[in-house]
Length: 122
Image (cartoon, rainbow, N blue to C red; front, side):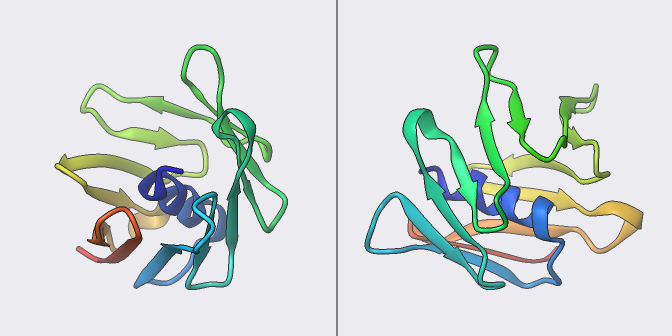
């Protein structure tokens, strides 16, 4: 499981207040987030969240959310989502997430390599 992607998707699905964190469990196919949302990875990399939403990539490597959220890359390199969130890689494993309604941006980074992702106000 790519914990960074799973954490960002969890933020898109649950709209939590920052700071926000997800960590791997001893089972490397499961993670739990600070808002008690759990994530399981299934066949083909399909992520299933405890709120029954799934996220997977189709043959074109596009994100497919079971709740209808869609995404596209804009001309500035931001990945924009239909629920008004946007995200982009800043450098390495650091990502900026811009929430809807001009809320405070968050920076997400690994605090323990590949085991814990923490997002805090930018």
